[in-house]
Length: 308
Image 1 (cartoon, rainbow, N blue to C red):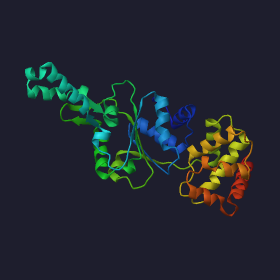
Image 2 (cartoon, rainbow, N blue to C red; image 1 turned 30 degrees about the vertical axis):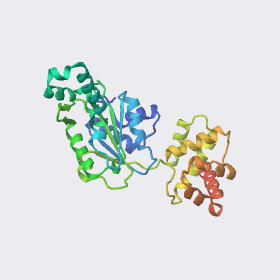
Image 3 (spheres, rainbow, N blue to C red; image 1 turned 180 degrees about the vertical axis):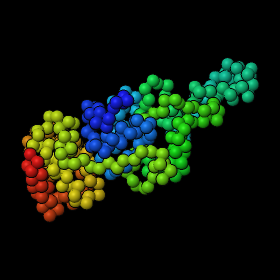
Image 4 (cartoon, one colour; image 1 turned 45 degrees about the horizontal axis):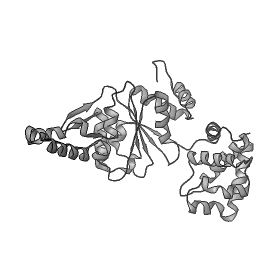
């Protein structure tokens, strides 16, 4: 973790040693989030590596990764807590069978049903009531998919880092989790939540950084092929595709090519492995039409050679 003398460069080196190559802007944003103990909102296109930031922070700090996947209609029972109704029912039946129910009375029996042992702690409550010496990393993924009401509740939780369960009281922490929120910007996140967070827009990596990422994540890939793959993906991203390939697709493609024993790209190889990098039929057709694959291969070789 950070020491008083740590710098954004130290953060970049730590993330790199755990398998993530950040640019200077992202390393600085993470450094500030850790130093100021503020949530970090990462926005950007799908596949640029936003979710991976939380995963690598968990590996680096040793804190548990707690992931909350947002979706339309999510509410507190899915995100914060719920009661284990099946266990409560079993407890009632056991109390009736043993005769305990007659002895303790209805009020006491109801109180027993709302003890902490029957509480199902969802992601937000687990991140606050973690009971660890190392703060967990709370990943609130695709927050833009949730609705306004949940976003407002989330703002309240992240402001005080406490959750009230009416039957039990307040759960709070003196050691808040490291919070990473991600958004693909399918809608704008409200200003109030943005003000609570530090913010960073995550771009697709530069050509050279993507080559480094491929070499790091697929160490058995040949260096010329890694450059050609990065160049080909860069060319695909310029074609206004429905779903431009992200870093994960670049890694998948490089892995597939290396598994096939490919030493360099050619039109046939690109054509038969296109499904590893482009996951929509419409995008594949757009790349294939009008000698598109030949153009992709040409640009891949030019880009790789130019920087070689």
